[in-house]
Length: 181
DNA sequence: CATCCAGTATATA
DNA sequence: TATATACTGGATG
Image 1 (cartoon, rainbow, N blue to C red):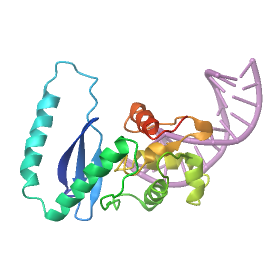
Image 2: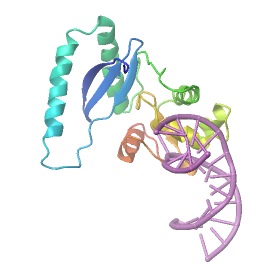
Image 3: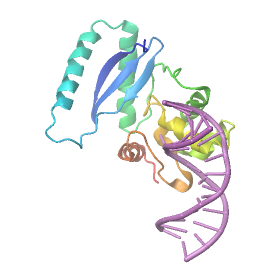
Image 4: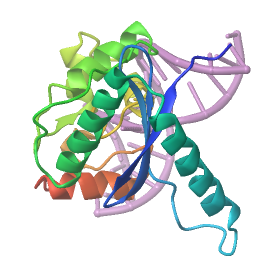
């Protein structure tokens, strides 16, 4: 009874992302699998290859609309990974979040390339200045990282803060858009 | 209800 | 600089 998503891979320069689409738009974006652990375990690779084959098969039967959305996702993702501002984004389906989370995510989308805000500033912007820690939780629950730029939220006084996809990603994304911290 | 957290200001050394 | 602590509100089980 879980929600049905169309799942499609994105081969980017930094690895293979996975995008999932609802009927409303891009609902999830997943970072490439981390490559550090379990040397000699090929199951991860082969399951990835299987995912690519399955997705390629699906590609032939997904609606044109989703196919178009996916092309927009691919382009936007590559732009951001290159440190540029994407011209177009696919429609986003962020309906899976609570009202609070959606308010935070809406605020994240206002932070333009190369800029940052603190968790406290986000909390203040949505009118809940003491919910600072909860803002961190909502950032961590962001289902569409990179395109919804939770990496542009730093802790107070320029400290790096956390990142669900791993701090290496956060530092990489910020560095590519010229942010110092 | 209890527990967990991608936080922050303050105090102290 | 670093560590400790109190306080905080939302999500989760």
